Image (cartoon, rainbow, N blue to C red; front, side, top):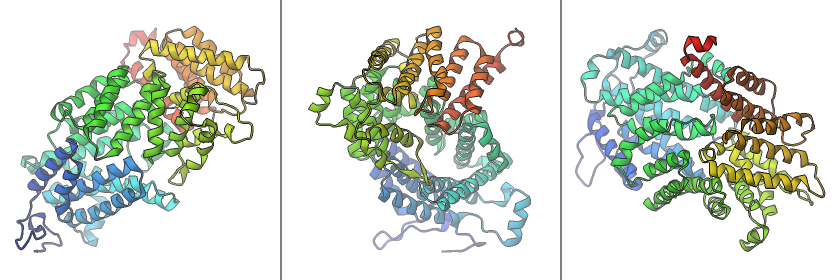
Length: 583
């Protein structure tokens, strides 16, 4: 093997022996084509075949190394199995070494110069530019897995890797902006598409952060402009590059999950459908495509069709059972929205038995769903609700040394069952539906909203006339009032909704356990004023919820939601004609 200027050339790397014959070397263009073939196999549910295609070259080709490790990271992220985590982390370390071999080697003087001046495109070969990009992507994936380490050292390492990854992406962006000759090559589209994906993802994810955190991140050198992020990802998704599908999946994740869980629930479903359509046509039986088709239908309120597609996704492949678990989660919620608690229980039970992602949440969901069924039916299923709730706290995970907020919330709610005289939770499955912002989906269907409202009113009557009110009596009443107000607001009955919200707010000083209720109710009141068109009052209430309360359950999640709503109001006002603003 020839060594030139301290660099290994990809064109000079030879494939391992096959029998007694030496395979010819693979060049950058051939590597990109073969990785594209592996990606097609992956999207056609042939996961083992995709890994088998990449494996022989993962020590010699930066793209094979990155593709192979990326698939293992995806698997580890879905299983949370320590063996999968270790395999993914080991593969990422190997991939970094492979990518490093193709990065430009610099001496001490050149390193010092680069601290002050960006490298010009002419100073790097095409291979070296791709090596920078691949290295940044692998480094970012390793950072994500490092955050799962429970130590503070792991947290610091993860943060440093994210910063290094971001800086390399910025350097690659500068190379794109300054490149001329490279644009003429067939590989340029793959490099530019990768830059768009990296810069777009960073900007989009950082833009979700509340203002005070974003200011700190910007001080550290990060930028978080949502429009820049969306624009870059759209450019990456529309390019004919290896990473087009990754930009597309990032946008789908933003529209179909992040905007729902960490936002106000206003989702751009038309863009999501347009992004998914070419891949759904090309891979009609691909599990990922079927999954996202189902998710879009669910968010539209087409729940029966969504259920059919989730079942089709399960039937499409049996190699990666983790995709089944994603479908079980969605089906559990779909049936919960319909209050088909028997079917919802079935999928919650499957998650408890098969998935390691968040056993505490799964157990709480299972017990909560059973709480919505008649006691005689629960007995027929052979379940004991009280025992299930008691298990929740012991199943909690810790990420980066901290408790997961939803698990912490579930464990706190389940504490009622620890004592010798447990106090039953009221409508716990509906309360968790609210935590996951599921009411934004229910709200698309007046019939489902009215059915849930009827359930809440029934629960309200039961606790109102309880013969022996517990210490949780007022808190339980306020939970019901918050959810009732939400249903009424979604049905357009704003005055009645405001009455419910005010009942919660007037009880603030007397609440004993559920400290999240008042700030979350203020958030819902802010949305009510926004729905009325009173933006000034909406902003005042939302800012009050953000600034005047702290140390309550799900605080970060509410701050994300408030941030999203305030941004939407700001965007709305910016688009208004000056005459209407003055009015």
